[in-house]
Image 1 (cartoon, helix red, strand yellow):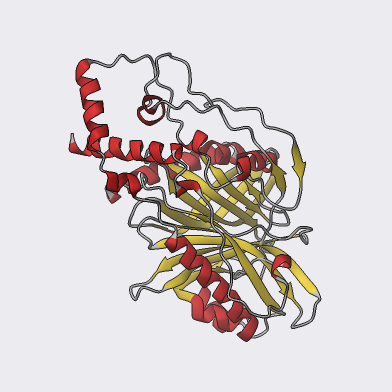
Image 2 (cartoon, rainbow, N blue to C red):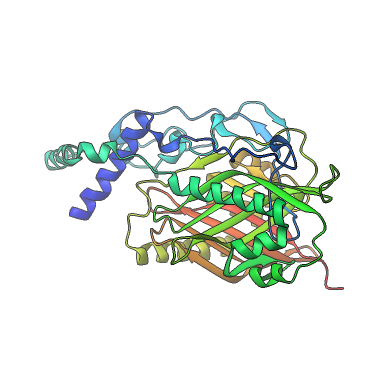
Length: 418
């Protein structure tokens, strides 16, 4: 009963915060220390391991948010007075789309869409008994003012974004190999093009062709502040010359070490054409205060179940599988293409992906708070008589119900062995 009250109270806190526009879904800007950059900040992004090949953004659109029902019973407890689905549970028609060089920002904020994130499963007609009403009233009254005032803390996300920027500065000053040796964790993973020991790889890379500089545009860290990731855009320049050799986007997973320092657990990127617009401001996504409240073993079992079901679905069709398990702000990365950010952009990108994909895991890790996890490895994709092999990275985040959603999917085709 105590555990049920705790879970119920957390949901009510979440709902009230959203109604009061608390900072749970707000984004904040991060500014790099003032210096004389090699490349103007608005013209660059990204950094990564694979010799600097990563990826940008594609579409820009606004999506009409589902109409919000302001009942605490409706949103928090999932109780409705009709057997109809919740408003917004079915797909809503979006407004006009237009292609640009950067991601879809849903309703002006890709990081948090309260009208969608609070939608629970369809509930049937339910009449509250007197006992249930008293229980509900008692639970609401039991929520302390201190709990209501507790904001979601994005400080860990801000910290790894700052460190990511410092990593880029060192790349400019000393070169990408030397900077990577300093920032990679022991046994951190780089891709060259398959997964390798990042610190050893960069220590032996003496012929890096140019200056790699990047800028983080998104950061998230787990509630336990032990695991997080940053994404952004990169540019490879020929030494200190203004000639650009390549552009792309990157994804870096950060893990806190025993000494309290953040180090790179994994780094990978994709390449794309030169962007025609400056990068967006840094977006910080705070951890969900209602996620990760289950015992870690329960979270692990739930994650394993989600990954197993996703793998089964991907074997029947990768595009549909990703969309079925996607979070609202999912990021999808493919080589030679700008990344898709948000469900609408993901649908546009994945409409043509009908191959059957199987995965071979190379490693994974879940945060102590049980709200963030990543996994990587090799994939095989069959489409007709064509078989494609490559590497993948998937990032999963737990929502307020303890369900795991796919927050990021990256697939990168490997060169033919011949």
